[in-house]
Image (cartoon, rainbow, N blue to C red; front, side):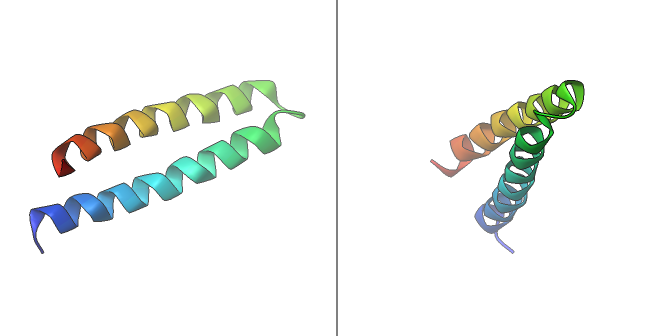
Length: 58
């Protein structure tokens, strides 16, 4: 597998995880604010990693 393919695969995995965390944060917003904030924070960290991977593809 080429390096670019590996990076794209990592991006897809991170994007799926990011979406899951955002959905979880949204669903927890009404019931558990603390867990919602933690999920949102983790999603933001993942988004930062995604942006770094984008840099390698440009």
